[in-house]
Image 1 (cartoon, rainbow, N blue to C red):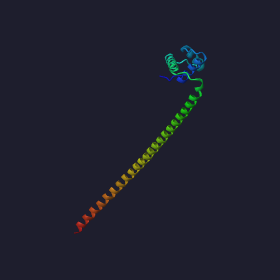
Image 2: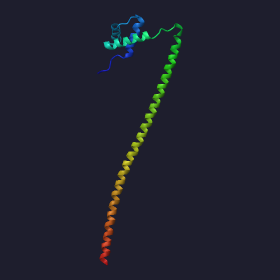
Image 3: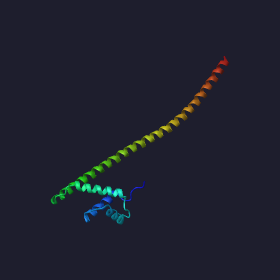
Image 4: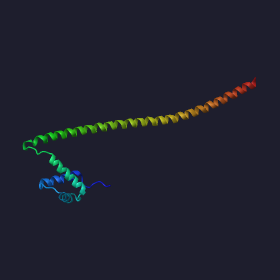
Amino acid sequence: MRPPLLTDASIRAAIRELAANDGRVTGVAVRELLAARHGARGGVARIYRLLAESRSSARSTPPLRPGAVDAPSSESREAAIARADLAEHRERTHQERWARETDALRTRLAAAEQAARDADAARLRIAELMRALASAQARIAQLERSEREER
């Protein structure tokens, strides 16, 4: 399934624009405006779903008093700024956490690679000592035989 050409935000903006201009918004008018503006009409079901949502939210929202327009907008602006600051803080914390975990994994990987190299060197050293031990044991056995023969 391919992603939609139009975002919900662009469809809602078209609905708001038509509502501000004409007052009465139809799905056909929204689709014509979208086709003219974006070159895509949008899916019928999606347009009508968003149109129904905007109508229901318009009914549920009480009209604002003329003097109260500034207070909610400044409060909502401050709330939006607070949300943005919180989101930024969360993102920074998230990035720091993953940076720490990535660094810890890199350190563990380097230690594991060093341990593998040390293990290879230890195996070589053990093989060398085993050969030296076998040689020493063979020499001891030869000396013991020669000592027995001399008696």
